[in-house]
Image (cartoon, rainbow, N blue to C red; front, side, top):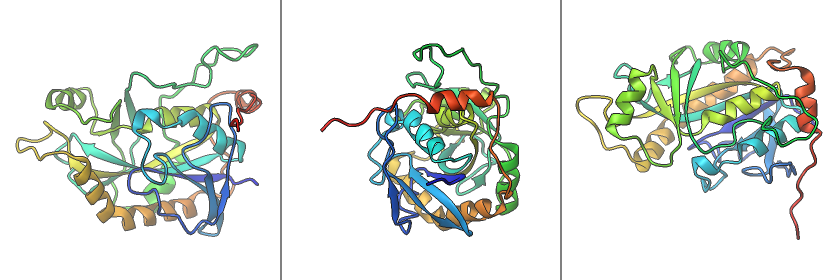
Length: 274
């Protein structure tokens, strides 16, 4: 079973593609994926779907098995990922419920395994991923065409979570050039890139982060969930139209040599003990 495109669903998108009836359990060298991979059809194309937090939103940001998820999708033949993400705004010009197709990431995580090339695999060379432009230009063009009302660029700072930022942290991130804050896009985007998989993300601004405006609102998980739920139909439409707009000959994004993908996918899997 192979599919060249996948959707990774973030907060609020866990059950958006429940109509996908086929489920694939993929054993990986990094343990189980967030959920079994669902497979179905979008815009006439065979597409894999994986909710990064699990269907019940039970995995906090730092516990998402990002390496297992990326490895599993790559093993199924995926070369392009269209994802969703809830983000807090650091910029008064990006109020809820703005949709944004970001072009940059700012990593502020601390405790996550963020590479397949960590020196633990014997006889493999060190690889240094060039990630000046973390999101795939081809997929970003497809997304901005599919969602013309979305903001076409922006920088997402990714924090460790699961707590929200302090006011001082929000102001610091804005001074550092971030327009939005999120807890999950890193290392997901970098890991996919190491495996030759291009990514694009449809971000939904669900709140103004603490310190982002003079009149702060109280940022809470309930606010995030409620606002994403309200925006969900537009997000699903943007994702489906993006899938439809991806060129038929799209073959991924090769930022490392092709052997890097081959070497990682050849690593022995860990099957659950019974």
